[in-house]
View 1 (spheres, rainbow, N blue to C red):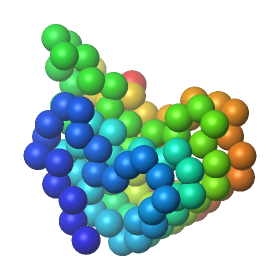
View 2: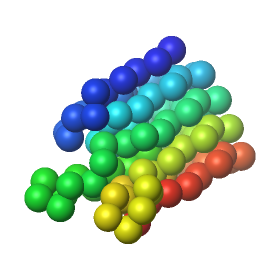
View 3: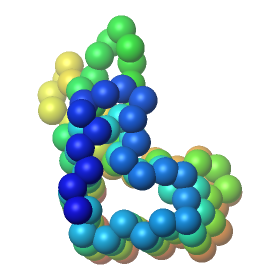
Length: 114
């Protein structure tokens, strides 16, 4: 399945929880996936986030886990946080807010970000 967010600030391919994303090609998003609980992201390619704009200041992430996220598995994916160069960068491949329960991040390629 392909999800194209159209390179639009404020967009997320899948959010907030209670989903399984398997073999998803998602791109052009601000935060590609938001995972606050009961989420499986597996065998997917999350890439080409919204380019950095110093005026709008998007903090792009491949996957965002807010504080208190529960039951999240991120396994066997390629996730890019959006680094192109010093002037065009995202935040991170995966970012977390802390205080999580039962979060598994296993066998991924994680790259990019500021």
